[in-house]
Image (cartoon, rainbow, N blue to C red; front, side, top):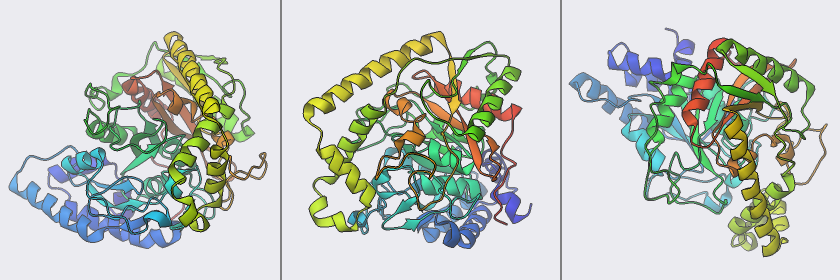
Length: 469
């Protein structure tokens, strides 16, 4: 195959080609690194490439194949790690001048599991400072660009992961999601991303984010995501919130289908504005689910607007993380993030506790909803990608830091620990990707994967490639 086709070959196929000796891990990694070298200066997806480490690991992976050693489920497959995630001996900057020279002394649990499964990291992917927002820029690593349209937002905070997956710089990428940070870049970049149930993938040592951040895969196919999620999942004592049970057979049961499930579709969750092209594409995608043997019912979940609650929790969490740093570092920080933290400092303990009480009430409402329905379909985002110098589209109400409203479909499922995925479902008239969100009840990660797979078969997307060649 030519180099471009190799770049877009799914991990599921690469593993088969590598284990049958039709393709060498060295050949795969050389091609991936060459593509990274060609595209990264334009896209700014990888802030800390590790080509020497990657090639050394690829050579060892090749030797293991030749020696007939037992091989992991991702043997020789290129991956990347988000720059928020600790990597032993490899710089982890978190998009901030504060950590520009920080080198962790241990891997996050999921990093170790990816290595043990045979995946090989090509480096660390870009993120906004401390992952604070849904836009792809950082005061340390600069602006990252959407591969579908240069100068446009690729989403955040798993910015580089989304770009790499869309641009064919490796098939599988690690993201994390505190208010949509897997689903936003996946939707903007036209790829698949899933935020699993909270605790499914052990996070490791938590930052102050009120137990909202989830770790998950960002890929071009659902099968690749299922493979990656299975590898990363399972209990770990380093994370007191990790789930005790091992993951279900995500790969083996992926094609079981969703016939007979009760599927709800909400175009706006009852209160969110949505751009017209987004609304039309998602409505068409929801209708397409009927081909999978389900009846789709349009609903208003009746949960109410919880934006103010999320705004309090988000800003107070940001303040808690930044308070010890502002005196020394504020002039080198993202000003929007600083404004967010300053607002958070103004809330009282009573107001924060009341917001947490509202969060618990929202969880109860969502849990009761998923007693009536098996799945919920919504837009992934209210907007398509917009110019990268903005944090809010020009036609939306402006604010000095509160970008959350255009991502209003995302954060409710962080606060309620529900699994949620985004699937590409079309393009705007400007050629920008649109995402459909599939949400399941807590612990029903397999069901969300199966629904994603069913939709992928009805409306395939992996053949769509951004205009990079």
